[in-house]
Amino acid sequence: MAKADAIFKANIKRILEEGVMSEQARPKYKNGQTAYSKYVTGSFAEYDLAKGEFPITTLRPIPIKSAIKEIFWIYQDQSNSLDVLEDKYKVHYWSDWEVADTRTIGQRYGAIVKKHAIITKLLQQLAENPWNRRNVISLWDYEAFEETEGLLPCAFQTMFDVRRVDGEIYLDATLTQRSNDMLVAHHINAMQYVALQMMIAKHFGWKPGKFFYFINNLHIYDNQFEQAAELLSREASACQPRLILNVPDKTDFFDIRPEDFELVDYEPVKPQLTFDLAI
Image 1 (cartoon, rainbow, N blue to C red):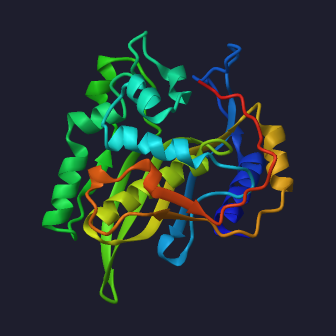
Image 2: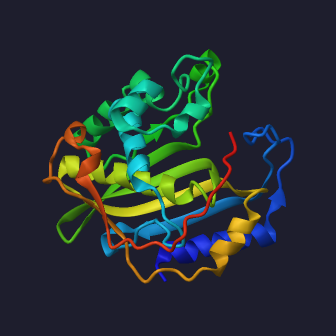
């Protein structure tokens, strides 16, 4: 069993056995009912990408293409526009979070990246001193949150460090997430931020190193317990998935395209499960 599958099953069991039910929940299902969840506080995982460990489960298919495109929308286009996401990338699931007929998700995600020139500054300081300890992406901006409505960022902070091992430089990344839907979004978020880590590493000609993933509130919604039991009953695929970025070293961050990524040796268990999302 791949490391990601073992972690996935352990997290599901922990939530079902040790979790508590949410109270005064904000999210709603599309039928208007309040979306309560069972959750645990504090979840941590570590993957060594250099050793072939990759955070994607084989227990159900994970839609990697749309997830990677979302990263480009946020960090390359630096946009909050649903028109950009839908017309350029053909990704439509963010429309549920449109703010007041603005065709945007409010001052969130890509808008924050653009406002603070986050990627430009990050790449510049890594170029000037790769060993500095201040390589932080933070999407948590109280001032922006007061300007407009919109979903507050879930995956809100990423930090980067470099290590030199036997002459090779490795880029490590740590993703911090305030809230995560274990069955639906866990591996989508982890995988897409590994893609971002790989893009930055390629920009400098470095190798992807370790990926650390911390979640504060890890939950399963109250309409997903049947799917959780199904996932626990499944036997993981014997494949060992890897994400490959097919561009030369030192390709400029902004020249990389979603189609440059390839997920190999991925044979997830089917059929796919369906989930009613909480909005």
